[in-house]
Image (tube, rainbow over all chains, first blue to last red; front, side, top):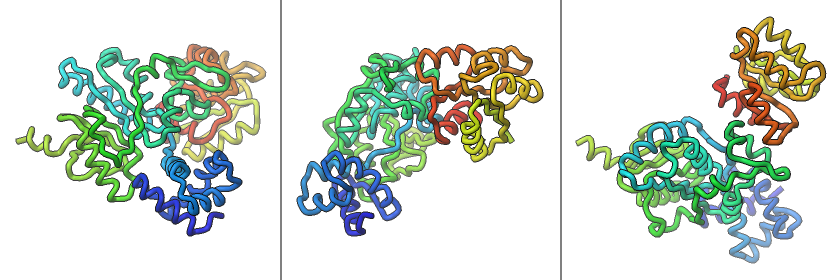
Length: 270
Length: 122
C-alpha cells in the first residue's frame, strides 16, 4: 500500500512536468504503473522508489515515473468510425485542397505507434491516397517512441483492434512477436515532443490527431495544449480528438471527434 | 437477441467463451466438434460462430468450408479461436472462409473487438 503522501507526491509531479491529471480516482493506477519502473531502477517496491524520488529529486527517475503514468492503453484503429471518415472524406478533401502538395499528418501522442500505423496501413491499402500523405508520430515518452519505431508487437497487442486480414497483409511473425513490414514503418517519421512545450519548430500540419490526451490533463494544461495544437494546424487543417474530449471555442465540430478552425468556418460561411 | 455457437473440444474454453459472450448480450449454444456444429447450423444458422481449429470429428477448417457451401451458410460470421498463431495459418483460415481470427489466450476485450469489427456489437 503506497502512503497517501506518496500518492499526492506522484500526482503533483505528473501535473508539474506534463500537466497530467492523476487525481484520487486514478490513484489506483500509480502502483501498477510504477511497479515496473521501480523494478527497472533496482528498487524492491514502488514505495521504495517513490521514497527515494522524494528524497533525491532525481530528474531522470522523476521523468521515468511521469512517462509511466502517461502511458495510454493502446489499440489499433481505436474508434473505427474516425478512421473511416479520415480515409473516405477528410484526407481526400485535404489532398484536393493541397493540389498535389503532400498532406502533412501528425499523430501528436502516438504512444507505441498503433494510431499512426493504423493510418499508414489504411493509406497503403487505399491506392488513391498512398504517396500523397506524410506521416509524423510524436510522444512524450522516449521508451514508447523506441517501441513505436521498432514496430514490434506482442500477440496480445496485435489482437487489439487489428483485423486479421490487415495483420496478415502487413505483419510477419518473428519468434513470438509480430513485426510490422518495413514498407509501413518507413512511412512514419518520429520525434519526441512534449505538447506543453512550444511546438513552433515542428512546422504546420493539415491533420493533427491528439486522442486520449486532453481528458488526462488538468484544465490549465488542456488549454495550453489546445492553444499549441491550434498554432500547429495549417489553414484549413483538421484536428482529431478523442470522442470524449471537448475542445475550446476556437474549434468547430465537423464530425465524431473531428474539428476545424472555428474562425475559418465563420469566414467561409460569411 | 443475437446468437453465437461456440465450437471447441475443451469444456473450459466453452465455459469461458460462454461467459464472455453472454456478458456481451449473446445467446450461446455449444458444440464440441465440427460434426455437432454442423448439425446445429443445419437446424438454425447462428449469427456468429467462435470456432476452434484442432478438434476430433471434423476440424475447424473443414467445418467452415462445408458451412459456406450450405444454404444460408454464408451468413454467420465465423471467428477462429485457436492456439494456432502463425501468419500462414491465419491466412489459411481466412481463405477457407473465416471472417476473423483470435489467437489463444484471449480475453473479453479481444472477443468484443472482433464482434464489433464484424458489425455484431450487441
